[in-house]
Each structure stands twice: as structure tokens, then as C-alpha cells.
Image (tube, rainbow, N blue to C red):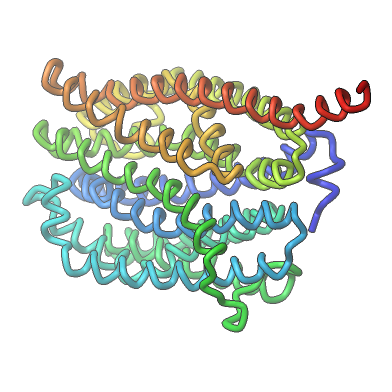
Length: 457
């Protein structure tokens, strides 16, 4: 169960042992996201690039379904690991597995039935809706694989198997990258080929995770006999999983709104946002990978009431996140035009996309703090603070800023909306965790103080 890693490793070594494979797996996810955009961009058709951008919110919804059981179940499993409750871990992992399948099937039906109105709602034009429907149809049929891949990667990671989680995600991404040029360009399938590559890659990753759990995990299970719908399992999974999934749902929702506002400026602007968004996802996914990497460590030590060791890990992760974000920001600012041009050779898209990317990258160094604190609250089983931070970044802060900014400043207001929302969310996150940690230390010190007083008496 890798207890030494959680209890005895020096904190920096433990954090890096868990976080590096997770960040690498996130980098793999970034490469996969960029591969679709890159190879679709090689068609030279800005409408197809815009179509991929328009359908990404739907993809994030499927990830949200997986997060309900991946993050929710994973958070509970990490705490159960600290409490040595192995049977409960088996029941929780099986519950998460079959729950992800059920939500994937629901997502498939919903997307197929409501495809046209959804695509019109997110800003698809007559030029892009045909491409978007082709892409989304394939993604809908692969909903179960996408949900399971996202859930199982986090379930496996929750017991400290960060390397195995990374391997599964790498398998899916490498297969996706191999299939992209074949299906998009050689077979002339365009965006439909990109969708097939995505679904097949996710399916292969799921097969690996199932194999790992059956053959190599001593504590996880997806056997039908271990499936339970018990109050404690469902309550702890949904209490954290639903707020965590709100992040992806709101990310999807905010992308829909952003595309809707940007659509009034034409398909070129939507394509520019799509390309710049893929590049900015490097910072987002690295920060998310760092935060997800320390989640098992935080949950385990919280269950053990080792708050000092828990806080040391959080501070070390925060420093790593700031340095990492600053490096990516500097490199991106130096090579902005070249980076955007790499994805599509359309001067209008490159010019607008490069400017958008510069604005987005300004919050790169501090963005990780928000993800780390949100993950900490998930690890502690504190649903409400986690929900507040999640809703703030993509909803409470972003939507009003977007609406007001677009009304007052037009396209500039749309471009600046997310960076300003990120800045507000980081300030809120750091303030909230400072208060929480002080309360944890005070609560932990109370029994010690009472023992001293009794002894003196």
C-alpha cells in the first residue's frame, strides 16, 4: 500500500514521487489535445479547427462525469487507505467503475438526442456545424470509454500508483497521436478521424487500467461481487465528486459562453481562441497534475492527523507550481507567434491567437495555487469549500466579468475575462486555506493543551 511513501519519505521526495508521474500524464493529455488541433490544422481549413474548438465543451462534460467517481471515489479511497480499511476500498473502487459506465451511457444518449440544439447554442455556424456534428457523433458513441479512462486514472493514482496511472494515460495518448495523421490526413477523414483516434485511444487506456486492477492491485477491485451501493460509499464519493465535476461542467459551460460571445466576431476568432486555449492548457494541466499528484498524500496524512506533514507538502507543491508556471509563461511569451503558427498557417488566426495567448499566460505563475487548494479541500473531504473555489473560477467570477467586459470593451473584454477570473480565484483560494490550516492546528493542539493542564493540576 506504499505506506512508507506517505509516512516516512522526506516531504519533497514524497511529493515529487507522486506528482512527477501525474504531471507527465497531464503533459501526455496536453499532447493528445494538441495533436487533434495540430493535425486538423494541417488541412488548412479554419472551419474544421473551429469545429474542434466548439465541441471541446462536450468533451469536458464527459470528463466531468468521470470526475464524479474518479476524484470523489479517489479522495475517499485515499482516506480509507490511511485508516487501513481495505474492504471498503474494494467496494468504493467497484462502485466508481460501474457508476462511470452508467453515466457514460447517459451522456451518449443525451448528446445524440440533443446534438443540433447544443451545437447551435455553443455558437456553431452554417460553416462549422457539419464538421462539429461529425466529430461529436463519434465522441458520443465513445462516451463510456472517455468517462472510464478519466475515472480509472484517478482511482489507480489514489492508492499511490502514480506511475501506473501515467502509463495508462500515455498508452491512450500515444495511440491517439499515431492514429491522428492516418485518419485525419491519409484517410482524408478530417475532424471525424480526430474523433475516432480519441475514442480508440481512450478505449486502449481503459483496457490497461482494467488489466492493472485485476492483475497487480492488492486493494482496488472492479469485480461485480465487490459492487455495493452503500450510504457511506455513495455519500463520500458524491460529496467530493460532484463539486469536483462541477469544475469540468463549469469549464464546459464557460467555453460554451465564450464561444457564443466570440462567434459574433466570426469563425476566425473562434479558431484563434481554440488554438490559444490548447497552448494555455499546458499551464492548466501541469498545475492540475501537480495538484492531483499530491491528493493521495494529503488525504492519507489528514486521516492520520499529521497536519504539519500535510502542510509542508502543500507549501512545497505551491513553490513548484509557481516556478513551473513562470517558466512556461516566459517561454511562451518569447515564442508566441511561432507557437501559434505551429498549429495553423492562417495569418488572421495566428495574429489574433498570439495576442490572446499573451493575455492568458499572464496568470501562469500563480494559477497552480488555485488548483492545489481546491484539491486539498477535496482530499480533506470538505465539499463546500471545494465547491466554492470551483464555482468561482469558471462561474461566479468568470461569467460576470465576461458579460460586463464584452459589453464595455467588446472583444478585449472577452479576451481578458478568464485571466481576471483566475486572479480573483487565486486570492480567494489562498485566503481560505490560510484560515482552514489555522483551525486544523488549533483543533489538533487542544487535546495536548488539556493533557498539560491536567498534569499540572
